[in-house]
Image (tube, rainbow, N blue to C red; front, side):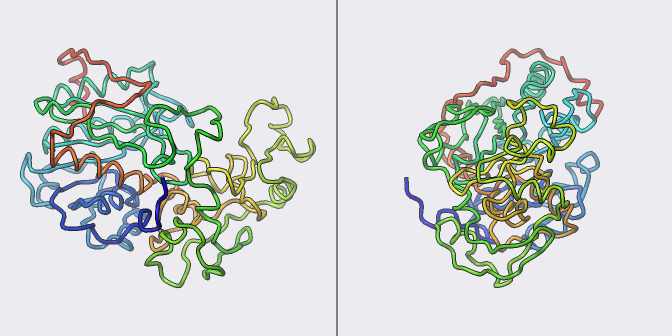
Length: 430
């Protein structure tokens, strides 16, 4: 399938005349909000606790009401007042509760205080009664506590009258130049018989939802049709480690590059390359595209990696290739030992703008705050193009329930048995 530049373009304004409403909790900088807007939704409210996310939101999406608040303190009454909606009128409640307690990247603690934010989200659902609920999180959530968390989420949603399904979505299948896996949950009121609907069919590649799985190498035919590093960042100007550049030097040469530069100001924002130590610069200067720590002289390796097995940590210090699909952007993309974040040609890790491009944020979208905060904002964001795909698919079902679909293939299933009150204390405690 060939996509023209307009397919990837993301506008500052809601597409068309919006008839469906959404509220975005845990919104971060607004990746989901931006995607929904470009799928024709009217986002009535976005909310997040982070000050810099609030500043970034105001700089880019000033027409959308933003409430800086902890969801624990955000009452449904306040939400209804800010949106002008009554109970049952909201079309979509969406959010990505912080996932550090669930992620395989950190300590997977079932009792992590951040995990209870999921249940505040359920509380908000119960009191607002939206027509649909969308939650985005990390796949690691599915196996936390040997599936206990997944079962718990299903039980609590059923207790308030919603049936929820989940599936792993790969961002690259929706036009995002990134091998980013996310776990999407979609819940519908039980009496609508829409359970399993709303998951978007892939627009890129030749595979469907669930045909590919994370944490394994993919064959070339399985990534055919995905956007590459060159598609994403090949037009951005050179910049040195610790430097920043504000001017484009060449024009765009791919459909994606054209779209990312559409409506952007002449001044290039956030093209700052993280400052690296002399030792790290020496290490990455040795690496050719596609090479990693195993190609470094033993004496140049960090002490901890000198004892590592060669089959381990194969992405550490890896230099990207222009023809490869970038790996998932994380908040530590500035550190070459965190993964495949070294530029294909230049001796540095990717800039904040390059990471934003890989996340599918257009160049007109600028990030506020310190550099450290910007790393976090970009790394924690939901890719807008993936959010747009979800927005289109959910809107189609809301407008015509006859277009309901079956739940997609997924290696993670929420248990269907219902045991009333099994975890009711969780909602009472929060």
